[in-house]
Length: 170
Image (tube, rainbow, N blue to C red; front, side):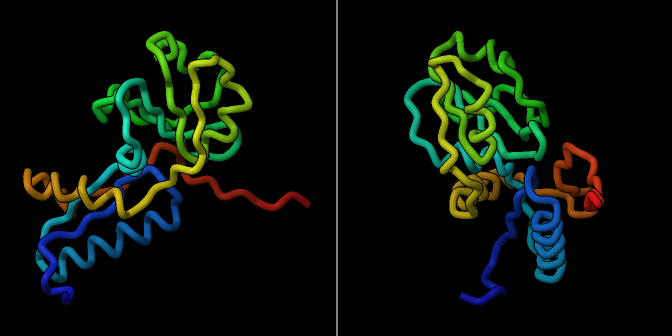
């Protein structure tokens, strides 16, 4: 297969590592323009949820956002997002509305810090689930078939936090 055989370019639209993400989005935009093919954006958190096989429960993918914050969204067992993506400080009662419904799966790099604070027995933690391009494939194909493409001129990743440069402590 050659690059000219591509029908579209897919890229994570966020959230994620600023540097890697910005490089990936820039490269995807340039390829889209050079090849004159559509651009598809896939949520990092949705691609994490798609790695699971669920019959019931709520899934909350969480990515470490430094300090005691996580990037998170909430999905039901049908893989539908039921709460918007946000950055939030890990608090003991932050998902109380969901733990009353049964099992709540906390997945991703933010599960490590969440485990220390979220103590309800309905929580199940799995930090082994990581963002993966493999899971983006099926999600991207659905978007491609639906012709749900991104306008490259206005596309920016979903920045939820301002980029802050920190200086080393002396």
